[in-house]
Image 1 (cartoon, rainbow, N blue to C red):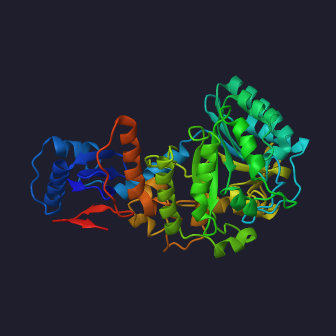
Image 2: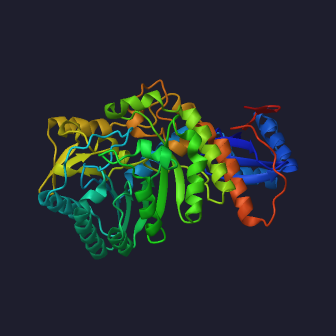
Length: 469
């Protein structure tokens, strides 16, 4: 037998308690000092090719994937798992932008906002497209996107009703989510979305307290937006699940606690999920954002600190226990995924949704996907995407959790680089400690004393000792 190359060992926040995690299997264990030293002994013997006596601990390590057979090629198994999971998916996954228009003029937005809205011809064509593709007894997952999707609420209502009937007829699971700036989320719209009964979440962005947010996320005419968004959010919470995204860069990362306190004052502590978004120069439209963008490592540190701060203020941290991936990363590499834009333009990634027809992978005409030479090559570029093509990814212990990261970014990078590292590359140890702390709080009426731990302090098994990295 041999040690899995995906083992992670981390000191917890509690003295004498260690955490063991395997990124390939997702196995997670917390163990005491004596048991951990026994683990150390087992791995030292295996590394030295000494005989290991089979016992309960060895059996547990084998069962959880920390020890594997000598002939197992974990990297090959990981690659096979990705492609098998991706190719076996029968779900229809669509991001629909009923309009590209937006009533905001955010300073870092990656889109231009031409006044384009789905016509009745577009709606009819999209209905037929879904009708032709939706396999009975599978799943339809819709994400409403934009621009600002609620500027085309009539289109959303018509398509929601149609998809609901179609899914009932075909015994399909129908799930929705929406990315909205929240400014138009009035009571009428919220009531309609609530009646749908299948919204996984509405994502609304607040970039800090009012004085910060209103410098970054303004109406097109320059008026502030924070108060309107917060009022709409307060009347929507409890009717539909709300997730708050906080987009951060170096200009606002120090004002996060002020926002959390504001949300707490408005009674939202136990009623919303909150997470951080990384402002990056995704497209040429937002190239200026690169001058204030945090590095991935800086963002990862802030993310870990933010989760601890949420916990201190009684919010549930956004970072759950990381889970291995068993298929596609996002809509871009989903076999039945598409991003539908006004005019019938079909893309593979959200970042393309407001671009021109030259960037499209297809065009919907009367429900049929039309592909000319340019669009065929655009589609082929996405179909050739391989998350395992990057050499550095194949040496990374986090690879089972990210499969190379964002396909849009990974395609930009040369093969000798990484794909597009997720924050787990930099803060996995902190995420594991936070999960252990949160579950400990949930289980115990009181906790043992906590010890300070250096950021991202991992313990790596070596032949004869523990090495802190």
